[in-house]
Length: 414
Image 1 (cartoon, rainbow, N blue to C red):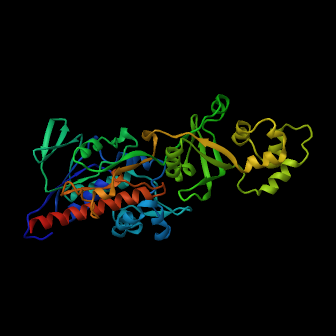
Image 2 (cartoon, rainbow, N blue to C red):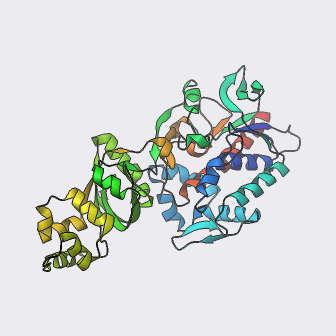
């Protein structure tokens, strides 16, 4: 910041990773920063994400990393150039948080927890002069000022620039409820509908199956599905049977494609390989082996170690006639068709797709219709799988928006 110029006052709305990173960037750049959030404390979804181990980022090659962003790779690549996975690990280290690379390439704090990192970060932000205003819900603009509902009632605040980082619409109880859409639509901002991402799907299970097997994990399994280019893709992993359908890491990883297919066709189909390490011809040989007086379930358990929920799935989808024909049983074991009817509701999803359209902003993430207002994080129209990709892009977009807001204020003062 030029010492001869007045200190800019910049407001950040939203206390998730993108908003906090924007606030850090602004404060380090010499701005006066006020951060507002509707919740009693910041980083609530960040803390929830770290409950089972905070997956900060991923250590794979950058070219592979960037491909995870699909159609939004060109835009997000520009953010990641500003703030890449190694930058994120160095940032955590400077906060006193060491990280390690897990066997899958995912990067975690050594203690796996989100809370120590967030505490250290907030201490640094306060030390750098960031002022936090909790329980302040942004409700739009009034007389050139930002309007908030607060514990003291309606309050107005003016600023030289604004960074919006209000999240998507998943886990609304933690603050990301998508209510900002109405406020921006009133200002003619293009917004793609918010949809569930990294989500589960509804399946029409029988009463018997869901009563007896809901909550059971399927591991290992492989899923074959058709991707956006119409190509058949096979992925290995695990997921869980739920009372209403399926969810889990393997399903989350392909949820965007499955969601869009359901939207286009009313439903979609995946094929489960219940024994992904066993070739089809070997499955046929085992199924054709004489079973004597054993039941089909006993035979499959004895020959293939197939039991529990996997055997139940065969009974759920195969007719009694099919179960008497070894070659057909083997084919079902290797490619059991499951029809997915609908994605689970957005408030159950890990994240959301949709949001402010990329062409509604310039490359510095400033809204075309509202100069001086920048946007970051999950409220933008992009999505990514779990594995550190979501968090990394949120951090990076906050960095980009913060730097751009500073530069814009400098330009306004010339």
